[in-house]
Image 1 (spheres, rainbow over the protein chains, first blue to last red):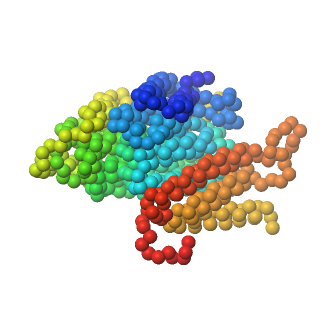
Image 2: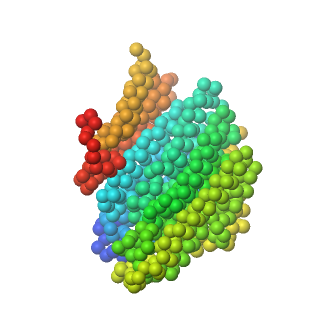
Image 3: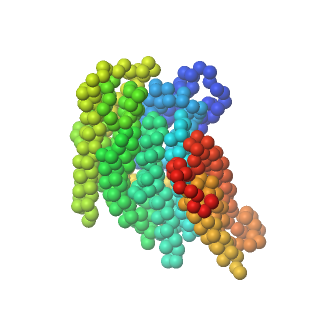
Length: 507
Length: 118
């Protein structure tokens, strides 16, 4: 058994606990500890990525209880990919938070951040449906704390709504899990996949209802229309660095949909097969429209970034809901791109707000501010990435999605939506960019110096995100080829089942 | 009246009340609604292990029939999580009320008079 698999869960838990042991008097100790934890997490995730690269599915039985009786962690290519993405994003966002002193705005920023990572990593690794629920709760509880970090009346108001809607979501999650357990008698995802194919006729309807309930919960996390209503206000009212980390939270929903649908409700599931797909496609298409139209209507950069997250997650879900190997390949290429771009937009919005404190991130004409050149360049690159224009990775991602959708009966709808939404998004971002950066030269006031605590190094994390996006383009050939293998592994759930339950179970 | 009917109608009534309260405008009724929903779920999870009477929840060599112990473990976990969450949402609602001066969930001030004194 490879004990490294549990390290992404243990490490954040230990680091978070270290913070609670004492209030560090010297600030740098706290930041260094948290950053060291994140760097170690990146290294662990990379090591696990290498382990899973060749296609082996490693299983870690907690307490050495064999599946399906014990809880297992399963590392396959998709979970390794998500771990790497999470840890890299967390490192960049944490750098931004430390540089901009966000962690000093209130108590316990670092432990909450680490618990958030614990929940995320757990959700990506677990092979047990109830455990997935528990890790969802862990990441949600941490996200409540992070969302409210820094406080303020507006944040509390929206935070309450965010907590309530997620509690209702958790309730639905439990109902779904309960129904599936009631008909299959197991919570282990691999075991459930085996049993769901041989359900008696009377239970198939219940299993279908359970599958759709789970999809509703995951769609709530992924902000799929009409369950997206909470996202723009929540993300726009929390601190931008936290919102940048939350860019991965919608992807947890997407991951859970992909995982459960391909594994449990896949081609072998009989009457339940691909149950979520027919509902997801229309709402994903509408999500794209809502998200990119929101870019036009946004009054602040954080609003805009939030709608950008809705739109690009919608695009991702359009590809996912085709549930076909090539479309999943396209979706998997688009997934890191969408996460990093969403985070980048939030960080750039934060930079603008910090460089002109009296205007904040509102899209209004204001006086020129320090570092306006590099910041506007970052905004331009983020915009290009979001709408999917060359040369950044959004272009390749959207191209892959469009090609994958070409053979689908609804191809016309998908093409029209994605292309028109790209145009709308371009107009929205161009309008915001020209108001913020170009029209500032018409303002008669002299250039405003940056506030004392804002240095140029605050731009570095955003620049790192741009570099990662550029790397996605430069390595596109190899990355797409790898995503092909990830997608092939997802569409051969028999290997996953055999890895978890042993060889004879798969026969 | 059978046990099944009793449990099923309890779950139904609790869920109905929970959903109704969750849709109210004030945080207090929403918190109560969430609590009721979580009670309903706890009973529901029990029922998913099938309703049996007078059977031990543990498997032993000499036990022929036993109740499914897993839903009980699940309910325990769900209770703990729901309890923590209720505490959090109560504190959060209180804090929001103190900071914003209104206990409406949508955050708007009380413009119109109370509809039914809730």
